[in-house]
Image (cartoon, rainbow, N blue to C red; front, side, top):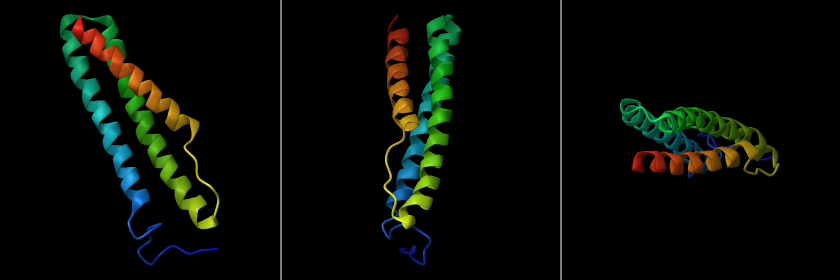
Length: 110
């Protein structure tokens, strides 16, 4: 069984840690876009836009949690030599975020 380097990172380039930060930034950006969309559509009383914004907020939170769960799984599986795959929750969340972004653009266009 391999050991982690003395730094506590899985690898010297900190790839797993940088990926975690990227997922966290993405989740924060999705939340910011959702807040902006909510502000725009609430003033104009577009129900679909408000619904899309609320769904984006939930998707951003799910994305943040999924990213952290994946990182914890990496910390457990990589040193043990087990293969690591993208989980269904992560793939589903990305798909939902993309669909909601498209719905948001459509609601602003009207």
